[in-house]
Amino acid sequence: MSKNPLNPNARKALDEMKLEIANELGLANKLSNTNSIENIFTAGPVGGMMTKKLVEIGQKQLIDKG
Image (cartoon, rainbow, N blue to C red; front, side, top):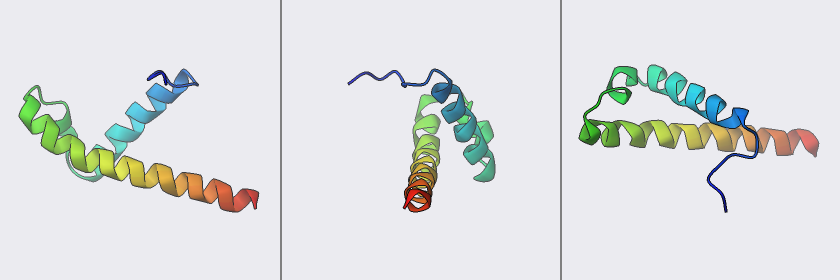
């Protein structure tokens, strides 16, 4: 399986989503920090929230199809 998204715009959309969620959580300034240890602890909550939102979007699309 390739790590490259099927749609070339997907990477940009995911990066935008990551920044939006980081802003919502008040972690945007920590995400851009060059301190890799701090980035690890920042990335966890942001990645978790991204996953939750993507699952919600997928569920909504499945419900709307049905």
